[in-house]
Amino acid sequence: MLSKAATTGPVARASGVERDLRKDEPYLAYADLDFKIPVAQGGDAHCRYLVRLEEMEQSVKIMSQAVENIPPGAINVTDDAKVHLLDRSEVYGSIEGVIHQFEGVMDNRGYTMPVAQVYSAQETPNGELGYYIVSDGTFRPWRVKTRGPSFVHLSSVARLLRGHTISEVVITLPGLNIIAAELDR
Picture 1 (cartoon, rainbow, N blue to C red):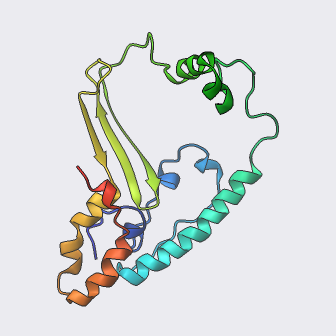
Picture 2: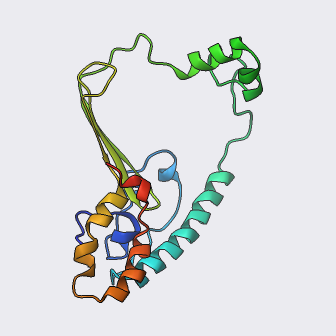
């Protein structure tokens, strides 16, 4: 069994931890959606597999509810290019379109950056993906730290495989679903 303090997502839920940021700290429309948090107790590769299967079922349920609850009507509430992004054909076809697109995306002009710190995270397929940002008042952050689930889960492999045979590595590692691009620090 893994340390319950470090692991998140399906790896933690396969070890009996009932934690999901979409339920515990809802963001976007998750507070309005009905879904279950899949949990297993064994903490092994089979439990992680079962949790991921149930998560696929719950994802279909979430998507169905989200589609059913899309309000009718236009997506853009106005035709003003300053309020919404232009169609790509307009952006690629004229310099005015590029300027309007740039103005719409670059909204930090005239904004005073606060001197503050913030941590924000969301539930991703592999677990909690969080960012800790410290601002010193300039447009470049003083410090940024990413907390990626794959990095944490890979760090636990030695403990996870303690007492097991080499042949079990073949089952254990894929069950953690390590994303190599997330490991580069």
